[in-house]
Length: 194
Image 1 (cartoon, rainbow, N blue to C red):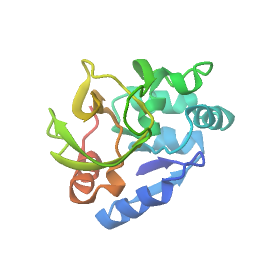
Image 2: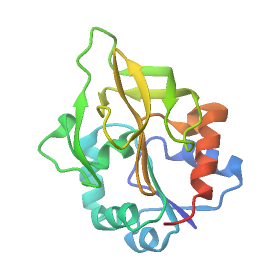
Image 3: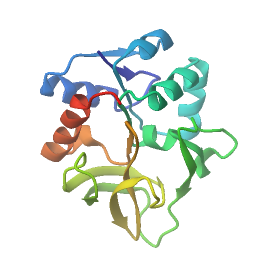
Image 4: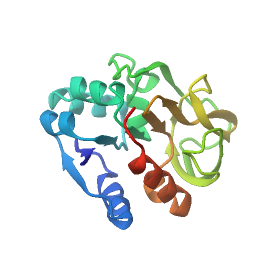
């Protein structure tokens, strides 16, 4: 069973709708024991890094999320869910992230409109991410690094997707990104544990 983590995220229902469209069975949950027993986990996210981390900690989900992302099960962090996978974020530097991925999430310092909103092209370096255009809504970004598997450009290049083993983070919203996004979700749901 796939678990969608429910800590109060705004894009929870669009993730559920995309999975229903794909015919994927899932459970939406805020219970650590259900996340621990899930075969794969999706951590959705919209909003503020600090509020998300506080909600995760209030629900005692930190340990089970870290375990789910590091024990070989397929794990997908979406948008703010990807940012929470890092050690910290400039959005709420006083709060530690989940520490699944090393480094910090940075704030865009651009002469362009921030947040970065709408459709933008993603250039993949991994077959998990289909080439195409995806929906973004982010004021913060992860610099391109060794574990980056897809990039996007908005004034500067940044990580559109990252992967360490079966732990994957995507800055865009696959559940709102049409055919390419649905294909990514389908491939994630078919990934075997490692």
